[in-house]
Length: 121
Length: 109
View 1 (cartoon, each protein chain N blue to C red):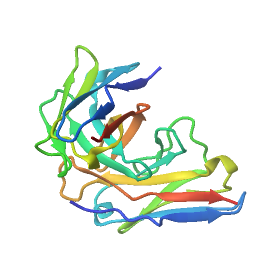
View 2 (view 1 turned 30 degrees about the vertical axis):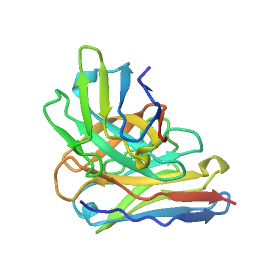
View 3 (view 1 turned 60 degrees about the vertical axis):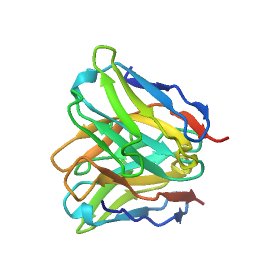
């Protein structure tokens, strides 16, 4: 079965750090771009970051650039996001997602179940 | 960056046809993808690419696009189609940035 499973969420104080992990199974992990997408409580989806199949390229939404770092370990079939200098507005469910990248398209075809991050004192 | 605009809420009578739209400059260059999200669940892609339905998605879901507007059509809406629907595409800048629409809450009456 193709699946993604996130872990590492929790409660953290403003200014703190957290590292989320996402383990993959059921597909050739190294063949796909991966992404993190978040959803604040009661709000819509927001793309956070992307990483190339071999980790050579990464992209971030402006609001997290310089604070978050996406990485991957193809030997471990895992993708990560290191989140530093966390703010209240980073409170959200964080999903990892597999990306289908085409010349004209960009689709998230497999999603994890999400992990909740709460930034609060 | 660019933005994608969706109507916040749409309703449809059971068995009728409904169209959910998504507008944005990036749609002139890139395909849109559509996601269905039910409460407490992760999103599920229902349409991507030119008009591709993943395995397991009913054929009552279809997509179309013209100019800067893309549409998700549900022909013969069912009670289980009540959900939030999101569109997304690549950012119009051409790099690997991604944008989502704000979402449309679909109510099946």
